Structures are given as structure tokens and as C-alpha cells.
Amino acid sequence: MMARSIIVALLLLVVNLWARPTIARYLPANYADPILNGLAVALIVAAAFILDRLIRRFYWTGYLKRKRNRETPALIQDIVTILILASALAIGLRINAGLTLTGILAASGAAAFVLGIALQPVIQDLFSGLSINFDGSYALGDWLTLYSDQMPQPIYGNVSGITWRTTFLRLEDGRRLMIPNRLMSTNPVMNHSRPHEAKRLSVEVAIDIRVPINRVIDMLLGEAFKATRQRGLVRTPPPEIIVNRITADSAFYEVRFYALPDQIEPGAARSAMLRALLDVVQQNELPLPVTQVELTKPPNLKLVLGAQEVSEALCRVNLFANVLNGDQVAQLASRSQTSELPLGTVLMRQGDHATSMFIIMEGAASITISGANDGMHEVAVSATGDVVGEMSLMTGAPRTATVTALTRLRVLEITKEQIEDLLKVSPELLQRFSTVLGKRQRELDELAQRVSQNKNVEADLMSRMRSFFSNVFSDEPEN
Image: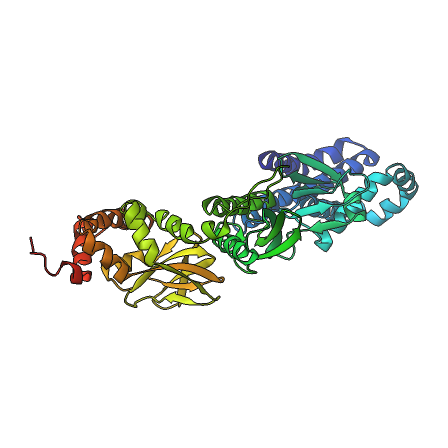
């Protein structure tokens, strides 16, 4: 397009420079003057067209789209094009023929009136499109919901284009809906992308009504905090759980959370949250509502949420599941106690010496590390079923992170004395512990994309553990 415009302009320039004398010489004045004036006006308009092409290439596309990542609606670009060409035409007519656009428009007023009546819907769309672009009610990339009597239900979609007559919405299923601009300006439209901040979404989970409400809330809320680390979900404002309604056999928990519409579609955000909540429901075997028409015994909640819960929590931790047998798990469970901690409790601080590890039964905790100059950085969120502090407890190394309760926490604490009791009876467990911890250390090194300094990680861990539990192995001869 640019090359052809330049060629046309050059041809017009050549004709204006070399053909004007010939035309003036061989044609009568009443024919030659209009032709010469028309050529001059055409040259000015061609130059203006080249200017418009340059603006489109280097400003609309080169600067705004590629460098600023901002898409300019086609309607705005077309308006600028019309203004440039109209200005060039007005200048050309004024210089060469003594005419003005106002005079031309006044002379064609009757025709414009007739056309206006015939093209009333088109004109409404046109001015609605101009209004939309100039008042900035929505722009390309915004997520909108349109409420209209002409639609069977509200329409939700992403603005993919705005033209003279039409706004294009890309629906969640990938289809493209074309809506006349007059409908967008005469019907209620909700803009989910303005202002540019997180918007609240919610999902609902039904749990057996006999399960204590506070414990369900803490489990779900802990997993909701953990899910907010995914792209598009946000921590602030924080997620919250409310009991939405209660029936004869169910309690319905509404999980409210916040997401950025420009980064994740609402359907995908709800799916991510529901998957996280389903994991915690399945892992903890929370009973779902029973709707069968038959007599059933209620679940023994003291068993599910009591001693058995402690044993199952220990078995879900790799450090114990892959090392201890059933009797050893039972021994450790009998000596372990659960405790409840309020919001904001610091379970451990970076740099402190270890005396215990914690298995999170309910709730969520923030894992933070201190940077060189700019304070604490959150690196992870641990929730129900996760374990914190195991590496420090087993090796005696200082804590590598600070762990703070994001919600009310219910934790199972495993102390150094309890591990020592196991090792006194079964010293061979030390080798198994070092194998599991060595594998975990290698996984952490891979996630952090760092190379381990020790070629034999397990041997190093074995040595450190033997030193830390010296009370158990002090009487053994050194190899």
C-alpha cells in the first residue's frame, strides 16, 4: 500500500511539473483550468495519504502496538485518516479553486438530509462508536457483560475490535459476537476490567453438616490462600469463606477470592480454585452430604478427626511414609499432639535453631525468606497436609525460612525427642531418613536451578544427622 501510494504521488508530481504547460497550451481555458486544478488537488491529497500511511506504520503499529503494547481501535485510526485527507482536500480546493468544504457541504445539505433519514440506524451506530471511543467507557481487551432485552441472557466477552458500526466480543468459548454500537450505548454494560484491579469471584462447596464448621472453614481457607499463588489470582484482598446456606444434611460454603480479568478468564480462575479445594476435601476425606433415602450410621467424627487423623497425617508425609512401618507410625502418633495457633503466629524464624517440625492439619502458612536489602519475600504457601521445618529438625541446621500463620492453624508438632526415641529402638532408620531427605534436597536444587555443592548429598546428610542426634549414637564406634 505504501509503495503504490508513493508511485501515484510521484506520477502526479511529474504530471504537475511537466504536463501543465502542454495542457494549458493545447486545451481551451474552460477545460484546462479544471484539469490543472484537479491535478494539483490530487497531488496534495496523495501527499496526505502518504502521511497517513506513515502515521499508521510508525505510530499506531510501530510505537503504540509494538513498544507500548497498546491496541488502537480501527475507528480512531480511520477518524485520523479522514481528518488528514479532509484537511488536505480543503487546502487543495482553497489554493487552486477558491472553494471551501463548508460551501460544498452547505450545497449538498438537502441530499444529506435525505440520506440521513434512509441511513438512520447506520448513523446511530456511527455516533455511538464515536462516543464509545471518546468517553473511554471500554477499550480493546476489556471484559464486558451486556444486558439487553434483545438477548436471551446477559452476554459476557472480551472486546476484540471496535469499528465504525460494530463492537466485536470474543466469548469465553472462542466464538465472536458482533454487536451494533447503538446497542452498546443504549443498554447497561458492566466493564469488569475497569478500574484495573482484582475482581471478586466465588465457588461453592457442600460438606456434611455434622463436620464442625470452623474446621471446614480453616481447611478450605488454607487451600484458598495456597491457590492464590497461581497466575491471575491475587492475595489482596484475601480470600474468605462464608456459610452460604444450610439444609438438613449439608452446609454450603462459599469461597470468595479475587482474580485479575486481564490475566485469567473467570471460568479458568474458578476451575483452579475448585481443583485446589477438591484436593483438600479428598485428602482429608471430608464427608460429602448424604442424600440417599436410607438409614445410615453417621460418620464417627472422633475417629476421623481424632487419633486416626494423626496417624493418617503422618503417613501422608514422605519423610515418615517411606521410612516408618505401622508400629513405628503408631508409636510416633501416640506421642504427638495437635495444637491450634491463632492468625499471625510465627511457627519458626529464619536463622533459629530447630527443635521441632510441623504438619499442617488445617489452615495455611506463609513461607518467607529475608533478602539482602529489601525485606522479606514470600516463596511459598503451605496448607493442609504440608510439612514445614523437617530438614532443620533432622540435621540441626538453622531454619532457612520464616513460617507465619495466614489463618488459624491446627498443626501436629514432631519434636527432636520423639525422633530420638525412634532411633534408639531402630538405629537403621537414620539411613532411610537420609535417603528420603537426600532425594528431597535434590528436588529443591532442581526447582531452584542450582547445582548442589555436595556430590554425595545423602552421605553429607547422614553425617549431619548423626552429629545432631549424638545422644543416640554417642556409644557407637566410628567407622
